[in-house]
Amino acid sequence: MWILPLLGYIGVILGFSFLTLSIASGLYYLSELVEEHTVIAKKILTYLIYSVVVVQILLVLVDKFPLGLTAVGVASHGVYSLNLRRFPIVKLTDPTFLISCILVLLNHYLWFRHFSAHPSPPSSRYSNPSSSSYTSSSIYGPDELPPTFTDVASYFGLCVWLVPFALFVSLSAGENVLPSMGSEYATGEGSSFVSAGKEPGKGPGQGREGMAKAVVNGIREWVGETGELMGFWKGERTKKVF
Image 1 (cartoon, rainbow, N blue to C red):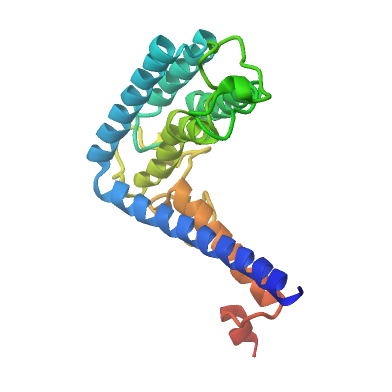
Image 2 (cartoon, rainbow, N blue to C red; image 1 turned 30 degrees about the horizontal axis):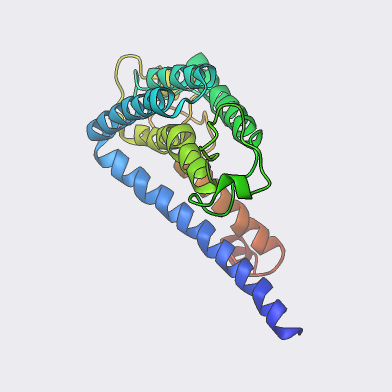
């Protein structure tokens, strides 16, 4: 077969492209919602952090999760909450922000190593463990099965990545913050905001762009400029030349 595998590759490429565009559109939409409802967004983030901490504590008490790794996760969410002090303003050189970025990577590495150290479970939760070739880890009882891929993915999504991703999207809400005392924290050197259509540092009082939108716009501009240089389409620069 030649045509069917080719269609498979084309389908994978198109699916990945549509998924990327959907994620970018979702970031824009969430950024707009946060900008319009900054106070509500801060409350939601606060309750979200509390909820994740409660879930992690319950996992220790009920499911016997490792106490050390859970303590690191709870402490990490405590550091994440410190970013809400000046919400939605953030400064990229702020030690709290830098430590938060490091803790996200550290939590991912520690929990990935923890879950990958356990043997793969049988195909079904309800299958007989004695009939399978795997051996249970010491943290599981003789009748307990290791977590499935769905369990691990859900834990990473909700307890490791959810709060940092929500904070990243919410930082774009600073576009609509009015100048006030201490506003140099957001607009000074090392700020996360850049002027719309201008390079950072061109002058005060210009429009500002948040982190999430800056990333999406930067990628979009790079794709547009690359397409113009390669001749895929004609942009404003090309029209001016010809």
